[in-house]
Length: 593
Ligand code: C2E
Ligand code: MG
Ligand code: MG
Image (cartoon, rainbow, N blue to C red):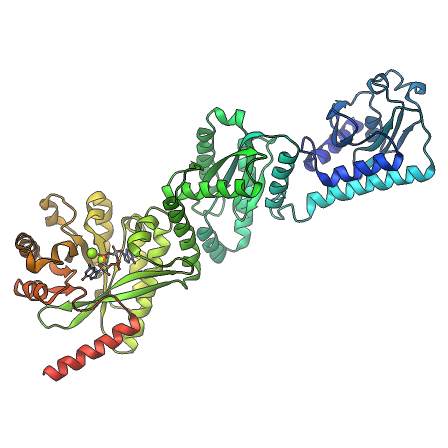
């Protein structure tokens, strides 16, 4: 019994090293070649003793990869943890009739491969077809070669190839394994699967709030959950902070890989979100079809990573990389992944402010905060391009949080300069879908000591129509706290007018498409005039957007539209330029007076 326990432990130690059935590697082949040359013998091997077979991690002069363990001299080395020397197999009572002897082998010398913990993994062995003696010097050399093999095993297992937190082989090891598979001619189609348990931004937030230990626990838990789901036989690699990868043979892939991965995604989400520290997780899985030997290892990882990000972008749990992904797709993809970084540093983002003018007095009474992104390589990116992308992802929350924080900071800075302006920010449905959005905003304003009435939230009409009850509830909370709500792009929602009666809003912003050519457009004038009258009749304050000339300005004023915003008065300006603009306006008014 004791012996079998030891053998179990020995096998466990061997399996832990994850050497069995791995592709050949030059670092081991080098030692085997050296052994063969040193002994001037045709056959040399690094032979690992599995439960019922001798498996060759490296071999010279043999074609097969394994032989039965039964009556193999290497098995004796493993059992005894000692070197075995057999000058002539035909003279040996045990091996006389062995498979080796039958295949013409006469000579065998094997030195044990012993781990630090004292487990013997197998033998470094040399074999010949003639009987032979071994000198003491040769014995010592064989022992040295065995030690070199073990040094390589340890080096490979530990140094820079194993993740310190999960103990899994890392990205370098995956790269090397993919290289080795290609070089070993073990080609053919495969799928590289990459699971990202939590996205970079959430992870950095979590580390900041809860510390790095929580993430480390989460990664260990993720390892257990993935390995329980895909089976212990599949090697998992820890390839990025919260990313795990594994290789699936294509025969497995044909039978519903995506479905199985979707199940895994759901399992991860459920399992990990119920961990002691509750972090809301968003695991996504990317799949890259690869042809071993044709797809570069680096490309394979990049493709799987891209597919995972694509899944994140499109709100799916699993996505497969497609070769035909076009420039558009790549750009979208890049913008989103770069936005993650931009939000963490905040350096590339800024707000500009477009003045809103009281049409009765001509004074600037507020400003709309509009986001600007200066990408370090792509230059200025229009919000018209990146906002719709971001709104589909979990970045929508952090992005608006950034805008709100920055707008509040600016209001405080202006207050210190005795500039009293109300500021409006744009929020999306994705924001209002977060149950705590309204209360967070209210709290934020309270902390900053800002009167709610100087803050305004703009929501597009289409957002309201799609998600009525839920969104309306949040807007009601916001209004009850004294923060104003504006309906943006008003008139473009094409909905029934009856909903206007119950709209939880203080004002409407008539969309610029109706206002821009107002002077020259008779029908447009009819429409805008009625929009203004109707909205005022229902109790809304009315703002016209997109006022580009003096005529439009005058027409709107004569119709009792309350406010206007547009290039005719001012484009959106950086805060400092808006201050200068306000100064100039005041001077003009003073002179007129
Ligand atoms: P919006 O909220 O309707 O903002 C007004 C847009 O009209 C701004 O474009 C502004 O620069 C532009 N504009 C102002 N006056 C005129 C004019 O006289 N003529 C014309 N043709 N255009 C004028 P911008 O800054 O490119 O923003 C586009 C849209 O992106 C915004 O439309 C808003 O929906 C969205 N957006 C901008 N910043 C944010 C943000 O921080 N969060 C969210 N969720 N959306 C934002
Ligand atoms: Mg707006
Ligand atoms: Mg608008």
